[in-house]
Length: 100
Image 1 (cartoon, rainbow, N blue to C red):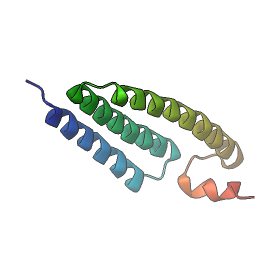
Image 2 (image 1 turned 180 degrees about the vertical axis):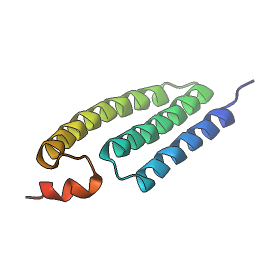
Image 3 (image 1 turned 30 degrees about the vertical axis):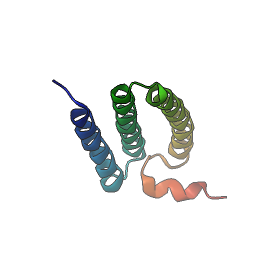
């Protein structure tokens, strides 16, 4: 039988992988994917706890997090395209060129 502890453990593992990707990588695409992984880990926890408690609040919150993640990807990819057109790479170190 799969319990809430299994979902929380999986969520913690996914979140840890996302944090590790954020800390160790310099490629901006990998950084965006790591943020998405962390958001999905949080969504898994929200939905698991909502199912355990019998409410819909976790599903609603997960829906809003998915909408936020879609907006984040849209803005993030637009910024990455602008940086790539200017510098020719998507290295996180070249992002200081976008300063006003």
